[in-house]
Image 1 (tube, rainbow, N blue to C red):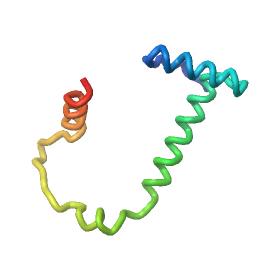
Image 2: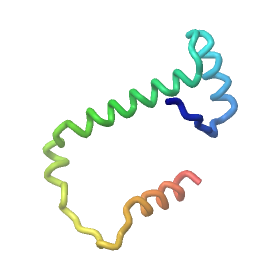
Image 3: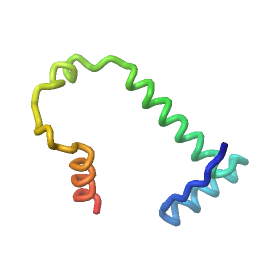
Image 4: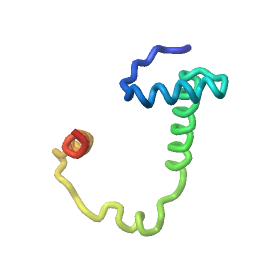
Length: 83
């Protein structure tokens, strides 16, 4: 089942992407859908891989407050950095 998705992308990027899609005889929606499929497959593959020994040794090496919402904290830091 297909669902409509609205994206906000720079006009120049959209124009270039449309030209690319036309050259490849594909729709822009098809290209984006396939790209997202590839991203999610790669993410799944990476999560199945064992941790690098150095990363594994660092895992759990520091503690944070139980009250810390890391998703909100990450969002806040990214907004500070990019906006």
